[in-house]
Image (cartoon, rainbow, N blue to C red):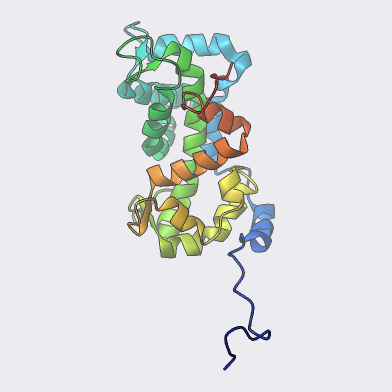
Length: 246
């Protein structure tokens, strides 16, 4: 045995490294996005600043009573109608809506407090001034949910084996696919650099499982810290932000 302080003492184990080499190979073969996610993102492309007319039309459709506020139920229905109209097929639109439905509340909760409260209702509903951010957030969170579902149950999409939480074993098994997604169809900072240690970063309560809300918080924090375009949008309304995006 080596004595303490012996110069020949073996070096400390290196810190965990991203599963990049294998992931890069997987990314080369990865499709731009799964078909349902690609459909979802294209359906909400009118989040772009140049699509103000299209957004105005959508706002009137989503806010049928004209009170200037969108509830979660109205957003949920608006997403469904938008997808059905985009696909020109009620059944196909509903299928895509149902696939990503668990992510809508995350986008809604982030958007509803993005702008300074103008009334006692503003922080409980999405206002017209927050609508463009909501549409952007729907795309972010749908993409994040697709990655989450890919790891949960170790299967693509949402299946019978999913329990809406990720175990450490599922994370270890899915890291290469997570990084591959980050290098291709889900280009977010935390995904590209995911490691085994990322599990403990996400598992904020130490419960041994990562819930969707924890997974999304981890992704959002990395985007905000890196000041990516998504991060700047997601930081709207946060106390540390000097001013909301234009």
